[in-house]
Amino acid sequence: MPVADRLDLTLRLVRGGGRVTLGELAERLGVSEMTVRRDLDQLQEQGLVRRVRGGAVALDVPAESAGFSVRERWSSAVKARIGTAAAELIEPGSTVLLDAGTTTAELAAQLPGRGPLTVAVLSLQAAVRLADQPGIRLLVIGGESRAGERSLVGPLALGALDQLRFDTFVMSIGAVHAELGWSEFDLDDAAVKRAALRRAGQTIVVADSTKLGVQAFARVAPLEAVDTLVTDGGGDIPTLDAIRAAGVRVALIEGEDA
Image 1 (cartoon, rainbow, N blue to C red):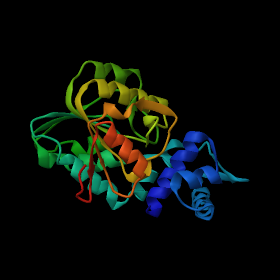
Image 2: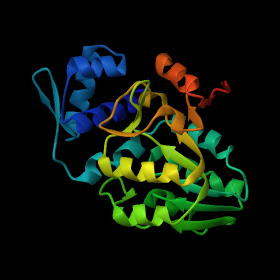
Image 3: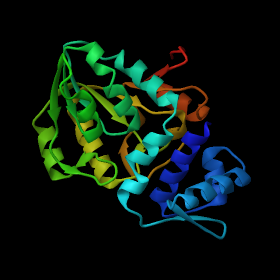
């Protein structure tokens, strides 16, 4: 796993759990505790976590210090490739709901090439990438901008989704596990994703392999609620097997397809 992706997942696991042990992180990440210590030291130097005996705890830092902007700087080329591959699955002339997240922001930049499209966004980052693009009819779903993440959540977002219907929902996800299914680290994000799933003809999940085999705080849906997963290879094989067994198409960006 690239260092940038490992730091991303480590930060989300600490923030999601509040306090996480070295052993738990090593097991989730598939690395040694020595590697976990080095990563936590780096996150502590950036003021994002605090090291404690045997693990780390989340810090009450400004959301913008630990949210989208941090993960965007860490983002590897893998997320851009996932976004490009997922964009190719979008049919011209369709209506698309685009979730928040670093990978969906990468995908947004590719959508003008698939136009004409009507694209509704749950992310201020995606809105910026799609504004004034030829062939794109842009709808910004109302809601509260979640500090740091700039995702649109809350009653206004849920109410707007209830009035609309989409051909495709492109969903980002914090975690996916064979038993828990698709899950998120934030309750508000999970609620919006559940509402979006109900309003779409099909759902495509974009997630790099660091999300596989991970259980987050808030359950979004069972595995079978999704139609397609676009990811990179090298992820947690039992989780990928469970996703396939649930009837979900798995598209690997290396060119393999299941």
